[in-house]
Length: 222
Image 1 (cartoon, rainbow, N blue to C red):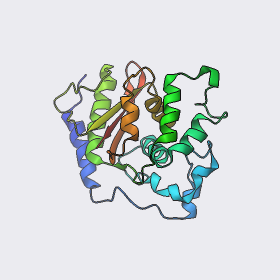
Image 2: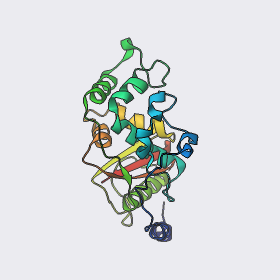
Image 3: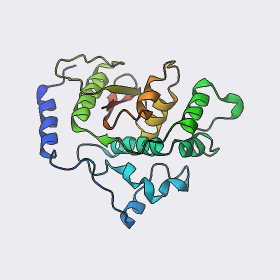
Image 4: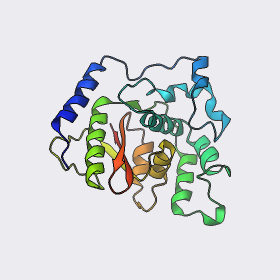
C-alpha cells in the first residue's frame, strides 16, 4: 500500500511548526498534576509522589496522541523506580500482570529480577520529533501492509533511531509497555533491554492500526 509523500511532508510541517516549543517542559508542582489520570496510580499510591512529576514530560507535545504520551510516561515511571514497578505491577495480586508463583515462567521471573536489581535512571526519556517521524512512517506502512519487523519497505520511511521496539496487537499504553518488558518468546530480551537502557534519552512513539494484528506500536529510541 502506498503512503504518499504528501502525508510525510504534512507531518514534517507540523513538527517544524512546533519545533520552537520545548520538548522537555517542566511540570510544575501544582494541583493540576493531581487532577490528571495517573497511569500507575491504580497499582500503588506511591506513584503519585510529586518526585515523579518529571516523568510526565511529554504531556504538552502536540504531535503525540494521549496514548503515545502515556507510553512515554509509563516507561519513565518504571525506569525511575524499577523496584516499585516490580512490587506494584508484578507482585501485586490485584494487578493484571500478576502471575501465581506456580505459573511464573522464565520471562516473568527474569523481568522481576531485572527490575529489582537495576539502577534507577535519574534522567527521563524525552520526546524526539525526528524519532517520532521515523516511528510514525514505519507504523503506518507496517499497519497498511500487515508487515511485522524492522525493515523499512519504502524509501521515504527514513530510520532515525539507535534502538527500536515494535509491538503488535495492543493499543493500550500499559499493555504495550509490559508486552515489551516481559518480551515473551524473545530469547535475547532485546525489547526489554532497549526500553530500560540508560543509554537512550530520547524517544519517538507511534500507535497505528495494523492489517493483521489490529494495532502496532513503534518505539524509536535515541
